[in-house]
Image 1 (cartoon, rainbow, N blue to C red):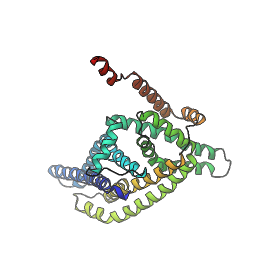
Image 2 (cartoon, one colour; image 1 turned 45 degrees about the horizontal axis):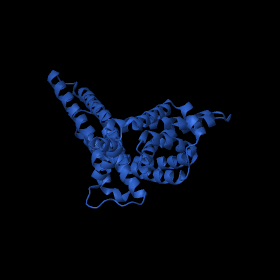
Image 3 (cartoon, rainbow, N blue to C red; image 1 turned 180 degrees about the horizontal axis):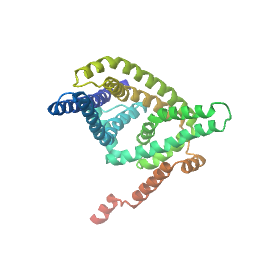
Image 4 (tube, rainbow, N blue to C red; image 1 turned 60 degrees about the vertical axis):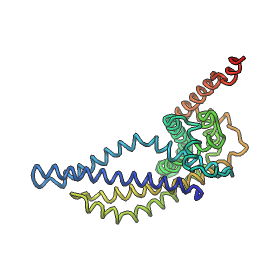
Length: 320
């Protein structure tokens, strides 16, 4: 991961920038609310500043919701492409920007951001179905508190598998697939076949990542409190929210790629030499509508490939 410093710098710039953006727009909203309330008379400035800050926070949140697929395409996927290249033992070309090279690798397989984003959402949905296996196994155990333990474990596993969609995406780059939908389908089946190994590693990494994120949150409470102090009005929850934002930005920029790199290494070594099992394919198809949709997209992509004419052959025929 440390060989990808340009991408780590980009991630840090982007995600810390997002956190700062939340703070600035929230502060602007609080200032506007405070100023407008002052025109109507004293006594309402504080509550107006709070509501202005909440509205500003929400407006920026809507903007980030729509920008998330571009973050995936331009930041995460390009970084994954470089990490896969390094894990495969390949050398990066000299004289070429690492960020440009990673982006070009992604564009070679996903011409549009919407394609990559749609695949990522389907993969996430299919992975959630796998976590229900563990919960289902606990639900049949008739021990006191087993049901509560099952609910807690299921919630934890949903956090743990948050990195796995990027690992599945990594295999589409690792295999240099011309049909990423089909490769993602096979990768999910292989993940299901080895879910015990993968979930165990994902769980430990989730503990480490969120433990370090909590430490960052504690460190950022002091400067976040200072920012809230200088904002107009009184918003006691502001410091807590801003500290959470900065903890999230460090997690997304530095801790997540560490977890993804570890999981990629485990996944590639675990599935080496394995073939997708038909029994697991049928099981996933039964459990997850997202997986069925992914298979449908893979079949459509295969048909489109078969229908695509050989342009080279057409050129030769026309010249003849």
